Image 1: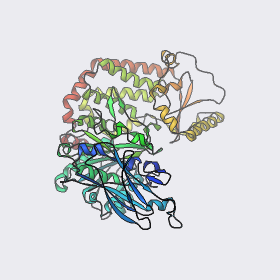
Image 2: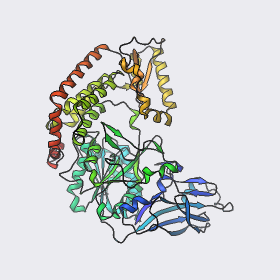
Image 3: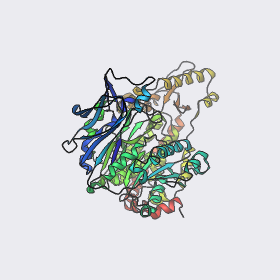
Image 4: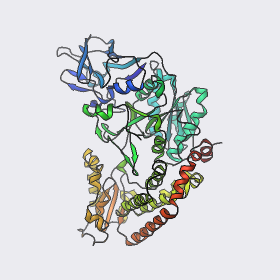
Length: 615
């Protein structure tokens, strides 16, 4: 069984060499993150009995088999021509750590004239192969939800077709189906996608009502469940449409699932998340939700570093209690995804959190190479997401932390409102309150909504515009100075800013800022002519301290808005704080109980069929 391919830098996916190999003099070491073989996870969850490294090599004189940092065997190679090798690793005798290998090139061994780094990779092909006494019958349905991202969809489909469906040597080739859930209903008119789909019966496009990511993924689950018996489907793999993935994730996932022990047949396989802007940074490898917020135990680690790849967190087979995987890449058994156990109709945000926590008794495992690259989530303002974050977090808390006091809930809602208010994002303050109000309307209200209409009404409250729109509100000098600072910010943006802004200590305001409500009770700062404070989506809301007006900007979308301190808005917000207090006293406890009582109803097949308008 082909378990995982030896991966190499790829211009279309990721070119960071250190994620695959490291160079040490005459040695080319396959100890990069994507080429390590994690032993303890395989030992616990799979019935593997033997493990082999299969290689096709040219231009190298020796191969060294490694366990952690110790050499366990070596073999002399024939460098003059490309030859095949099959080397057994001591899997039965080894309980922990990682296997990998290094290739040695003697100084006198030279490649043919014209050989460069790119052709050097062509001299290396290989994979890890496993043997077991029996294999599980596995058929995977990839469920990809998309909304008007045709270019991303085309790229991902081309990757699947060229690397998986066209490769007869891969077992997964005949055990993978793809469902594209088209929330924007635009794929049928895209010439490139239709050309690729012609004659390809393993990919199904399903037009869907725009019910957000939750509605799209759940529509995919429903379609898969309807075909479960006919196609003998066993698992559904949820994937974002705008994520970049290496096709080998399907190989690794299939190899893992086919060799699982019977007691772990229904384990969830999560996906690690890498950043698209800095491809070597791991954004997440499992998250937890506690105290109204997402907790990430291994965030923003540089996976070029061997030590980070083999840390206790990355090698441990059992994750901390409550760990779930985001739906950028996450695979569930169809014994977990059932007609009586579907996600909540949340549109976006917390669908993956709630569903993952609800089914955490199945266990979860993460494996290198099963995951995706995605753009950073913190590069834009919360905007309409403020509504969903508040409303949906309260649902998750109601289900899993019913003992949480109403005072703690009120403090959370007020904090969400305040963080927007003190940086003059008045629409977001309103959205935070609306999220709380709509939660208090209960589950029956939720399933009666037209999700697209609701989302459009919420989005209408957010008014970020291209930089050029600031010309109408600023003097020429103010405009040019502001744009120059915003462009300088984008040019200087890097890992340091990301790490700085992910540090909670750096986002907290001091006592003076908190006691003066971030300077609202103090006179505004005096600014020289033409100077206006610019605040990015990554900056702390306390950066607006004592400013009369600020420019809120997103450095990469090049959108911004001029925001001003407005005491009428402060008075309006005071009314919202009061309304929230009334809701927490008179409506919140009843709503929380109703969600717990009716969760099975609102996550059931019949409710979803009606909600999505499926005939």
